Length: 120
Image 1 (cartoon, rainbow, N blue to C red):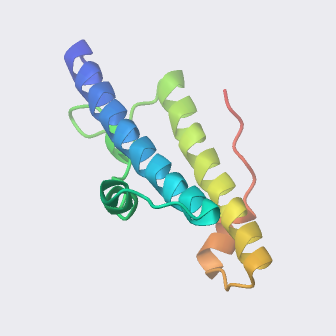
Image 2: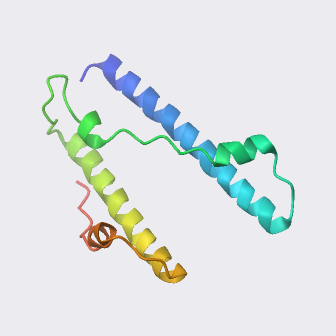
Image 3: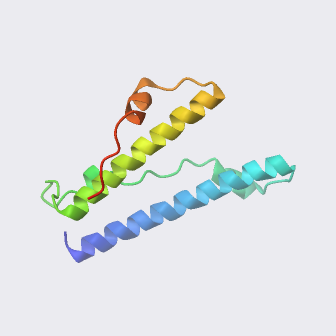
């Protein structure tokens, strides 16, 4: 992958992460304002209702320009981190659903039971 492509991909990912952080911060503020009985500004409420943009999938970001998967150690580690994050998120969702008495989809339960991949 060329240096220009790496920089463009990193810049896009950083922008997405910044937007996601802003939305999460707005959601937290709305919740805290509700608990404290304060008025939340309308702009913050609107921001908190947005759907966060998805992060690029490793299947997209770990491909070479000709479409094959990269096999270098950095690419393997990045894929392992992505899988670990998904498994941990599924485990958290299962725990929260149990606590709140909500049903959890079978696919999420199966993912939560998977073993975390080792980081090389």
